[in-house]
Length: 485
Image (tube, rainbow, N blue to C red; front, side, top):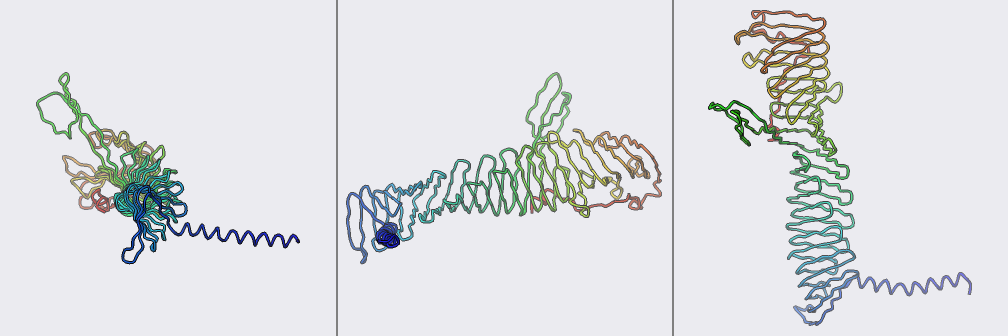
């Protein structure tokens, strides 16, 4: 026999043997078999039914289900299972008191509580379906998912075993070592630890007291990075304990909520809690959970904290150093605007420095401009401009303002709370010192020039005395408006 003929004969012989084996395997995967300690057959409405009791074992391909009782519907290829139902396929185990098994779909369903364990996750729910061909679970009612790094709860959840992916809807909550995320719907990839959340999203970080809201969130846990790009809102509540020391007299003084009070050597030491809430809203917000706990807000940024408010293109908030940096994004973009009490600040970049949640320093860098409105003469604005302005604060309020390079200023004078003209000055540098939050000294250095304008030249003509670059912004954001939106 030639080699070619021998190869043909071997192929034909092997084929004739393999075809029945493949058909047999396909039949085993297609039809269910049920065995047990006892069996009872009957006909119900023309349908052949087998009832199997005691140490029941249902098999279909690699799937093995054990229980105490099974009712097998032969023509439908289905079975009703009762009593400690345990289904196993490869590394997957499903446990439930009762279940229905649909052989043609290779699907099990339980409405009496179900638990899934595939050695990677544990899923429990009030009811659920598992599709063994697809390795897909669809669970409903008080669904809980546990794995080594997170816990996920929802009303409904679909688990794609091979993809390590969950899709959850309804009262969704996922907790890991650093974050807790709430949402109406959520998609979570276990292997990459990537999460997408939509509608009524809220994220809390265990390392700080910051809460971020939005309508779409992307969280990349391995990179410690979170993106919120639909209606983001950041809220941080900080409380600081302040102490006030007074002589022990009978006079009354009003404090905030008192946490501690001691009397020693005729001195009262009272501690009160001061609460400051930081609110930031923008079009896009990013959180970097690094050593600085950095948050970035981009496009139409609005910030409110205590007496401060700001509108700008771009802000960076460093939680640990206590610093907020705002700046414009390009030459043609508008400058950041910041308000503190009755003072408005503009500059190419405005930086706020906090120490123990208290305002310590404000840097206004690049084309800096300040204007302050008089509370009685509301049309009168003290103004100062320069290349850079540094404003310092202590626990009592503002202590000094330092202006560097090409200083221009307008200051109004008052005598017994009545207007008394203004001074318009220019210099290379300037230093303004404050006492009890009022101007105490003004020191000007380098090429100093001053012009005094009497009250008769100023009254009713205040807005004719403005510096180049004067703009009064009236769109100051409020905390109530940001939270309401």
